[in-house]
Length: 399
Image (cartoon, rainbow, N blue to C red):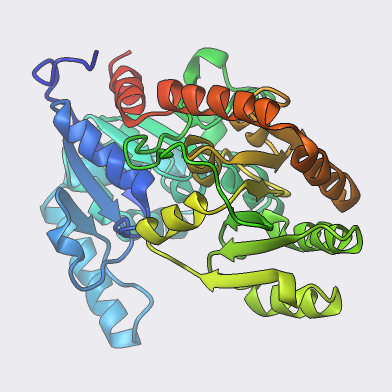
């Protein structure tokens, strides 16, 4: 049962880089669920585009401090004026907290000015949607007398610290409630000295009413493999293509479709030619959900051979649609897919093992395949639906 929507009147401030796009269903569903359960939601973003202010909750955007010198100076002056005359107490409190953390006066003033848009609103919770969004904002919540929450989704916990040394040094000293997508992420966060009770695991959820199979057996003559992923190195697509070459060498009758766009497109296209599998691979580009669903409906096996992965909604969608799912053991994927129960988990960066597993799955008899599919569908529908997620976030803000 969902909580009574009349039991809370808290205001949740969610910090993101931009207003969630149509395809960013996680944040859209979360905001909608919070509103349905009686929360007021304010969305803080670094910048807005045309039409963003029509988003179904209050949107507060930062001024642009990276435009022309004259425009930037004007925005700095306006922010300073607002800090002094509109909300002086919170601004001074934030400035003092920054100085207490050891920041220079110059950096403390800079952080006060660029974060002015976060200091102006009275809210109960300030929730940073990604870990790195809390950088240089670690004292905002305390300054505005709000509780602080931070979500880690995978790359921000594992990759950002490699690029930005010490980026969470101040954050991990603050009083924060953390949201992570998997129990493995919780274990890794605890290794940073965070208390277990301050880390809440809430995995992603999908619209199980939309992503559901009609139960019909796919009749295509060749095996249809599919992946839905951003074309980014962390998705392990080059290793997947190496496994595809091994399938070709084994005379498997198949076709592999990659749905998504990204910076690695040219590199991956070139890899298909170097591996001589271009006739077995199709890149569709980014597609709307309705088209993604059609591809899932006509496919047999879903591959997600990522190097790094927080959890992955696309794998949940594939399971819900009755595909046989083979994934890597990257972070949350081994909790998304239960090895030998709802699919198969293969050690990452070993395309030979991936190709071998695909062939093993193809050779399963219909009864074995059906048993895996049924358990996977049931688990996703029961444990990863939007109602479960909404209830979990209701408890997150009311514990």
